[in-house]
Image (cartoon, rainbow, N blue to C red; front, side, top):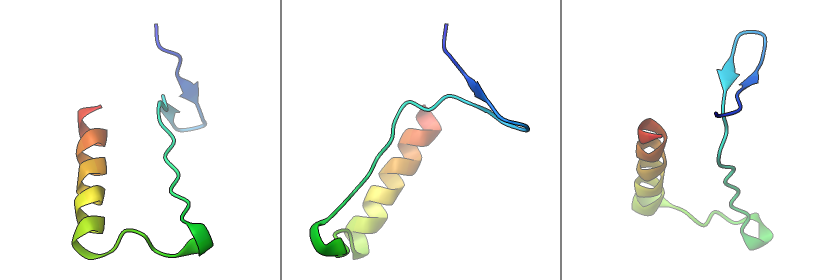
Length: 48
C-alpha cells in the first residue's frame, strides 16, 4: 500500500524531486528546448 502525506486541505504522494543546478546559475534551458522539456514534465505528471 502507498504512503500518503496529509496536510490541512491536501493529500499527496511525492515520488520525484527534480533539481536543475547549472554552474554559475545561468539559464541552461531556453527557447524551444525549454518549452519541450516543460511539456514533457507536464505530460509525465498527467500520466502519473
